[in-house]
Image (cartoon, rainbow, N blue to C red; front, side):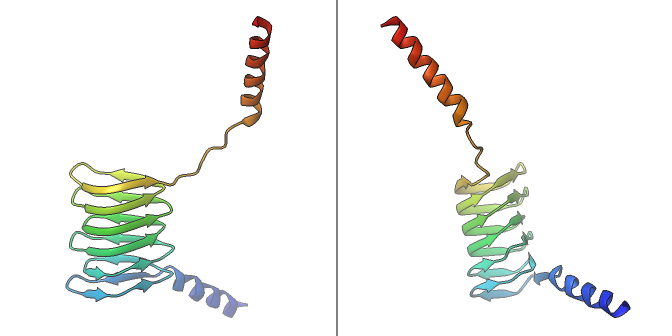
Length: 144
């Protein structure tokens, strides 16, 4: 009974760990992970994670970042594809191509990019618009 609880806790803790790229570290190549990232060093390549990426003040990414959320204080250059929220702090510098669901910018941030927001599309009520068209068509016929 008690052994089962320990196994479940160990498994869930494994997925909640954060990867850290320290200041002074340079990585060239592609990174794929299930965990979140905190980057204070330099990445020359692509990063792909279903989680969150925090790019610290000393952090630099030159490449493609694919994630759910990103919080940027450092410098990003390349293609940024997020399914949820991009938060730019006042010290952030972003250039390139950006696709996000939501976007938050603090005053002082530099954003030199093409931006496309890919949020949830609201459904149009086609029944009401069809009725309105039909009622207009009927009015036109009455006046003719």
